Image 1 (cartoon, protein in one colour):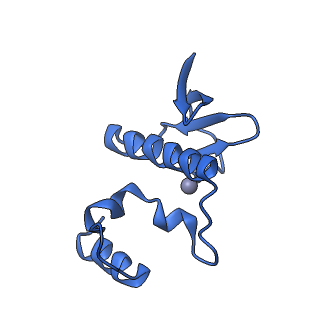
Image 2 (image 1 turned 45 degrees about the horizontal axis):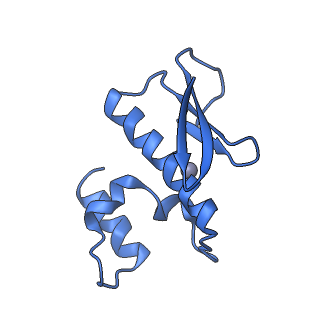
Image 3 (image 1 turned 120 degrees about the horizontal axis):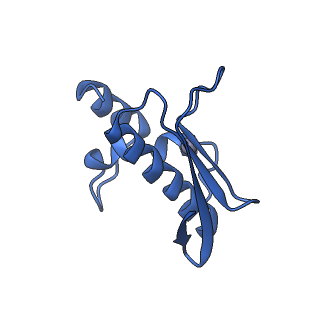
Length: 105
Ligand SMILES: [Zn+2]
């Protein structure tokens, strides 16, 4: 059983390799049960890694009680956006979205 410690909380990582009908998410995190599930079916290896990183960031956000207010947490913690975020520089979510679309991510 794979586990990852996120800021003192141990999360179990469940890897699912079979196809599940109606499953649109590549992964999800259950904070109450402290486990994250990654669905590898139809995911490239790279996408699987990004999905795992995404769920880990959800865990960090939860532990740190970061409040995104009206903003969509899903978009802010998308690892594909990280190359476009520069520390100390204000950037709007629309600009980030546009950068991602321009880069065809
Ligand atoms: Zn998410």
